[in-house]
Length: 73
Image (cartoon, rainbow, N blue to C red; front, side):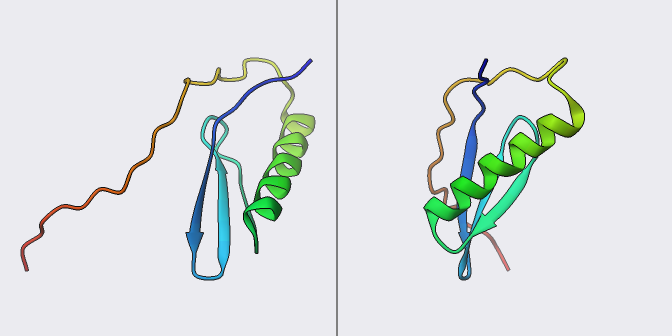
């Protein structure tokens, strides 16, 4: 059996930070591929530790876009 979750990767300085949206699991890597692989392993370990009962379902497609807003000083 497999479960689908959504993941978001952001670049912070020299690291890519990967987050599983539904579970709150976070990992990192020096490349996107490394961050993805590390997150997959972290989610698998999370599921081994906490089980697969009552897992949140994927909320569907995640859409990210750059948002720029004016701020006053």
